[in-house]
Length: 341
Picture 1 (cartoon, rainbow, N blue to C red):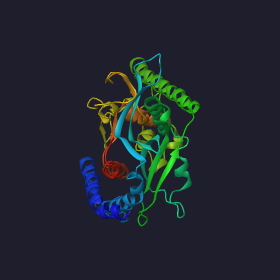
Picture 2: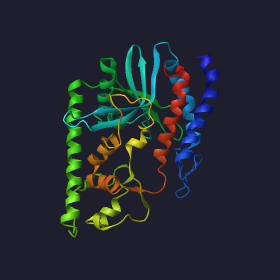
Picture 3: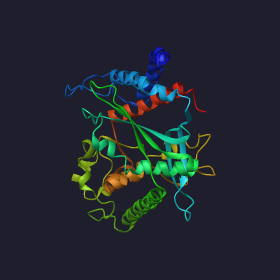
Picture 4: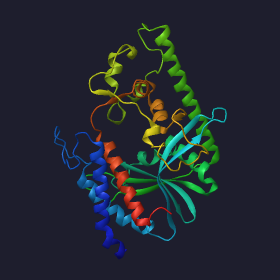
């Protein structure tokens, strides 16, 4: 532990540089060193000072395992592409494993998650811990992992990190395992949701050509139980104003920005894509967790984001912090483990 502690400050500095680099690359106007909200005056939890404190404690806590002889890092930010339907070979589920590692002879998928869900004797609230079982993303990633690594896969470890004003050592591995029956159930459910997406998209196309003046949109129904979740839906005002959004262009505060998982995962540049014996093509029918989960939460919100491609302008600090933490974790895990082997 002493040897690790002597290197901790150096690793904090290099991983913090990665954190700041990601933030500056992806933020349009939100400064990383902002400590208070300029409008409310409340403390801004997600800032550079908090990240540095978290990194120091994380390295001290995770170091013994990541440096250990029975730990081997197999992949970092590894894209995958797996088939969903033998009858539709072009239908592919894609994603990216944050980490793939071998520990005590078994293979695990590692997924980094940051949260403010604090519990005094936790450090995480029960609802946050339980949110990963069942969880569509975790199930899909384990399905892909079993297809690519076989029976050696033991499960997925959620590497949870607490973001808090004063508690900077809240970390926990949340292990998730699934039986084969559960994973095949996930495949059926995912194909079901994709069929619903495609049916609604076809309905919109038909309305555009056959009933362009209909006063309401008979497709992608609203799920009004989700309107105020997670700080509120960014498309809420549109749903209040527009019965048929097909009659309107994007409103102020939004831009047209298509979600392209092929580009997001850099599949064209990837030297290796796990799970498929051919090159993934842009013309394949590609679905990722973002699109499927968006539809499950609210079909109308899916329509705004993935059919009309409306993207809210401005930075979302939680996403910036989470992405920057991922970038820092790449450096931490690679340095402490001795690199991908």
